[in-house]
Length: 318
Ligand SMILES: [Zn+2]
Ligand SMILES: [Zn+2]
Image 1 (cartoon, rainbow, N blue to C red):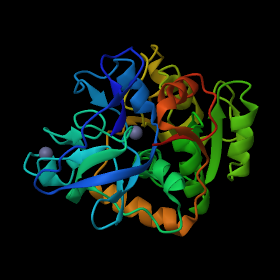
Image 2 (cartoon, rainbow, N blue to C red):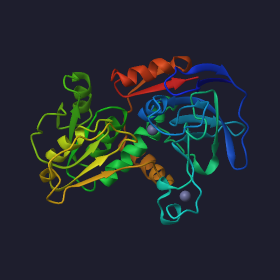
Image 3 (cartoon, rainbow, N blue to C red):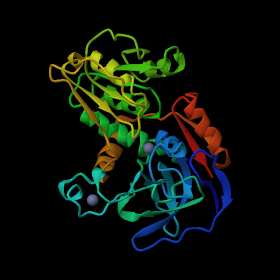
Image 4 (cartoon, rainbow, N blue to C red):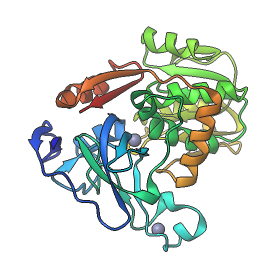
């Protein structure tokens, strides 16, 4: 099968011909139809996350069909959890001590085939075609977990309006919240997209929003956004960091955290998050914005994500 392979962080992915993988006990062999690119892929590519499997096939927002049955399935980041550590036993398999993440510990979807544990696959909502469904599987799903952690905030700020925020903005709008979208200064395209998806305001991250926020979610991997977001939320408000990696957070005065403001992070997902979110995605009738690249152009897709050139999500098709 054709696959784009990471041999070493920092080196371009290599197009290779690999044997079709063999499913083990409880695993499925899936023919990949589409796989969306996640910012986490870029962090792995750049060597910012320790100890990936190498060589590695990236990609953890996969929609494909099970060989044999033809059933359509989605494969997310959480590829396996042990089910027995203290976190798994307390409903927090997202924090499992021995997890296997797709496209990190296990080969992922930048290929014609992928093997996945049956118990960790999801069923994409029927109304979405294969390409449209891919960003739901991480951008949507982990974005949704971050939204839950933001609590019942009526006025919600989203910092970094990319793949994840463009989905979460629609969910939040559907839930009746007011969304304030923060982008890189001058990114008129992302701000326009935010308004078209229901945001009541869109501006630059350094701007003071027209209302004090109840909570904010930071999707961009930029530590400097943390003090900006803390300044934008009210007393008792919460700032949620949704990324797996962030540049260092600059020092800031205690006064912007005081008054019971909270700063928390979101890690990974549980299977229940996936079940709950995909139900919401079907009800809320979310539109995903995608740019399709052929599999061989994965390096280009990653480069465009890095440069902030994409509106919505890049999706690879083998
Ligand atoms: Zn565990
Ligand atoms: Zn992801």
